[in-house]
Image (tube, rainbow, N blue to C red; front, side, top):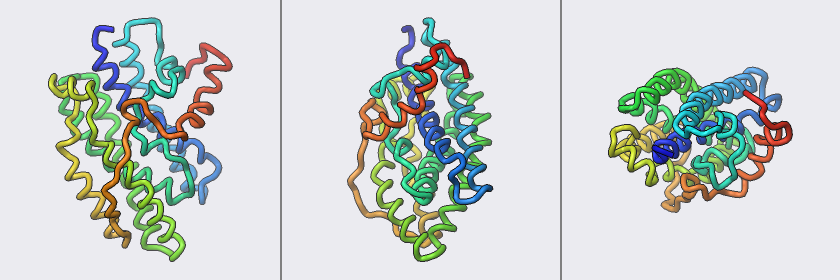
Length: 251
């Protein structure tokens, strides 16, 4: 492959949205209310729409017989480079919202910077996607405030979700070999530069939601290198079922 670093960099971006989109898709018909159920489903569809553009570009760079469907659906677990945060399960609605919020704040800042890339295709995807992600961030932020400053039970469950998922936030700012290579070419986003801004934004919302900011300094990583939690294997078995059972299906 001529440009393996660019290919892997694109997978790292796309896999986050693919896996999170699948997680949200699991809630279809199971939301706490019809309006919220539809909102989560629409966010899932937004993310899947974004990943199609990324995987189409990745297939073009690969230059072999693989299609966007092959790249999205037919890789093995260790070949996915999403962060650990997005593969965490829908334990309850509070976990879903906290996971979404923690990723949305990052995603919005990331796409803002990606629009400055020297790669015109990535710039075009970022400009289109950020309009959707702006809504995603507003949705998850509003719900986080509502749950955190709501009933005793909703506050307790939301605080527990924050405490449990906080350990996965640091990985958002870990850079791989492919990331660093593309940063040097002016193509990739140097995520370390907006790390402080990310935590400042997140902490401000948590405070407004009357939630405690975790003091834990223990963080987990590995997803960007293909080392995942046990949850991803189960998720992929559902995600890939149709494509593996009925080969050559197209989105």
